[in-house]
Length: 259
Image 1 (cartoon, one colour):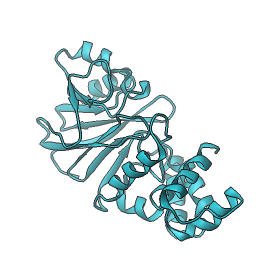
Image 2 (cartoon, rainbow, N blue to C red):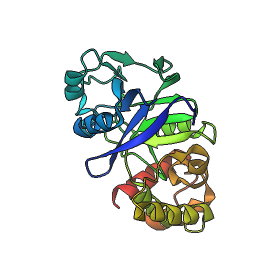
Image 3 (cartoon, one colour):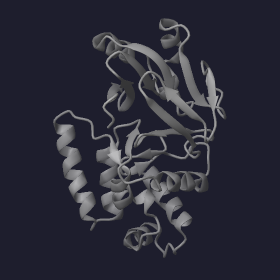
């Protein structure tokens, strides 16, 4: 992680993380679903909020915007142009670049529809803020988009460098790994990761960020074409799943929805 800034999780609701990016003086917040834990963290750290990054319109990601803007008039609020999120001051599309001053962090906007139609992610300096698209060992539910959209969005993220840190928005790792182990029971990476994640949670620590390299090796939603998943998918369906990666991904997501 670059020395000019730190990234720390602020727990919210039952399992959300609001990511606070700061340099000990100024701060930005990613997906503030509620304002109170953000205000508490800012006060404790003697930080001044400069702006907000939004990935999509769900309330647990943007519900605190109005209150934060009331506390910090003139606050910059970046969000997806394809979603009408109240309080957004700078709508963004794929390829846009933003600078989080004075942190020295430049981020590129990625459009990653699937969970919602206008969902975006932010990428820069080996950091990925991906909201509810990619989770550690899992992926988001498909509420508005199509399986094909989510499949292609995840492929875009899977193509990032191995060392890219994945700052997703929920603490789902342990349950995602349990499902992944059902799909791919002989993957040693999954077994090691599950032990590590359970130990982290037992100590009250976050399991995030993950890394793209690990996701590519162990996340079944990034590996739908892998033959190692075929026995479990065939058993779930009751007939052969075939070899089409999108079909296999669609079956995986439907199966996970039932868990």
